[in-house]
Length: 340
Image 1 (cartoon, rainbow, N blue to C red):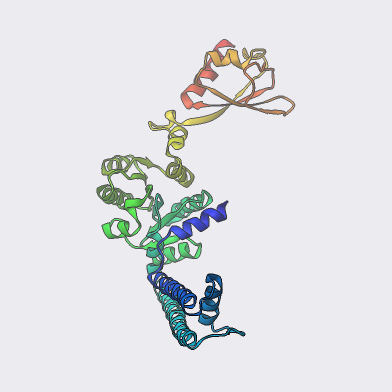
Image 2 (cartoon, rainbow, N blue to C red):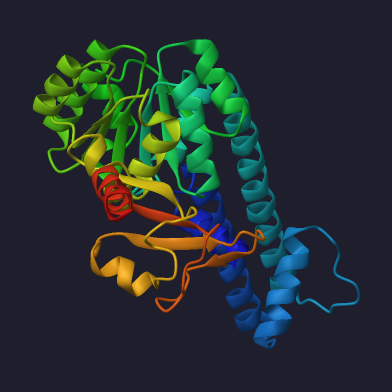
């Protein structure tokens, strides 16, 4: 299935003008040759098509019995066919040499076919990590960086990368900003990231923009500049930024919108000797903590049960793996201490 999708994606991309023209001319020559032999020699269509192909490819006629008019027409077909093949071959050679000397042009050509892709502004340590996550997710994306060496590294890894300043309108437009699904401004400079957000938001107001910021003041500035989410590397890291790009709703649940106490957290609840939760079921405990999710449980013997049943009775030595906000987890632990 992935190969079929890859073939469809390749067919949908804009073709090189030289290839398009060559295929069009070759098709005309083949159709004209087939129709000509059907008319002149009164052959069946398949017979005429086959003879046209071997004439163009100069394979040979075998024992075909041609009339004088057929021979004259064959000369025209040969000249037209050889001319078309020569034109296509020379054009492809020129195109290959030009792309080798100008990789930027090759990148721009590939970007023209992209839709709903992601744009990563900055290919430093965090940019490389985010890009690897995008590759693992099998999505299309474009890297932008001002450093020629970093751009070369990205291209060596098979990524589509542009050398340029992401704060400039022309560079973002070349990356297909108007067709992109989301943009990540994750350079090492908060000032640059804020300018990228401002520029991108001005060009594409509906674009989802994720930004990296080191301090609280920068977070406020980037939000005003048009960023939908501003993440700190110290609290979210590259994985968090990649998840926010790919799965914004899931990331909102995982990381929260209002600080650490609004983010999803995982915790452990140990059932120690004398715990008031010993002998009670998860249904009983969950009644007083309806927002807590019981992810798994382990017994004193080390047995693990994923998504334990609500009727699961707890015993001394059991450990519950729970999920919720930090505030909810603290509240449940407080209930256990108070009851004890």
